[in-house]
Length: 68
Image (tube, rainbow, N blue to C red):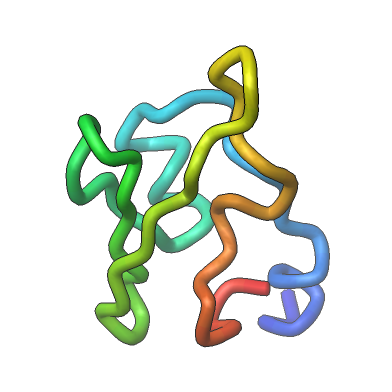
């Protein structure tokens, strides 16, 4: 399958298991701060949480656009 098609079809992980995060190319860096590492470029970012403890839309996307 074309890599561009794979990326276009990516959906947010349903949970924070290593397997689910690996599918979108990220790793949990620090569970206490909800920070993640992009497996492609190594960038670390904090996803931040909304009220009620839910992540913002697109929280799993690398800020550098590696997995968007």
